[in-house]
Image (cartoon, helix red, strand yellow):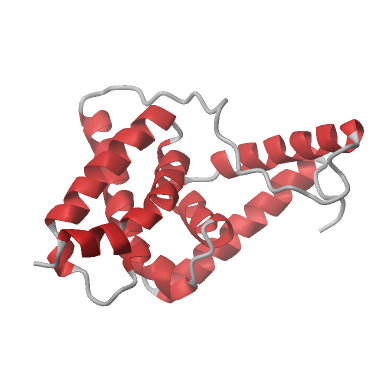
Amino acid sequence: MKERSEFETLVLPHLDAAYNLARWLLRDERAAEDAVQEAALRAFRYFGSLRGDDAKPWLLGIVRNTCFTMFERRREAHEQLGLDDAGIEVEQIAEPGVGSDPAAALQRRDERARVDAAIRALPPALREVIVLREIEGLEYAEIARVASVPIGTVMSRLSRARDRLRASLLQAGVGGTA
């Protein structure tokens, strides 16, 4: 089994990405924290199965499976998943020279909220690939590995997700023309 320090070096830097994926999939911050904790424990337990040094897709695959297991547990128990999305937003990126304009800041915040809502409205399979590609920056092959689907499926899901997002955002008046 690989050393604990190697686990800390290769896996722990990706916990923020793991939380981000879990938060988007589960749409609940507390459930996302639980999923990441459970996934990290599984990752540590099965660290010997990691091939190579690219731990991010490997960990995100474990997080994805953990999230879907949580969905299934809730469905079987007839529990209702909390859908409090109020605190979920894409991380803010500072835009040079615009920070001092309150009207521009308000417009960016409103657009960001509409984009967040459009992403949350996607079905889980489409939301998953859009988050992994556009927010986490994974390559198609890495997404395929995380989602356990062929690259062609990733590409078609991304295309459908982008089409739905574009339509939703145009309807909401975000981004002008696409």
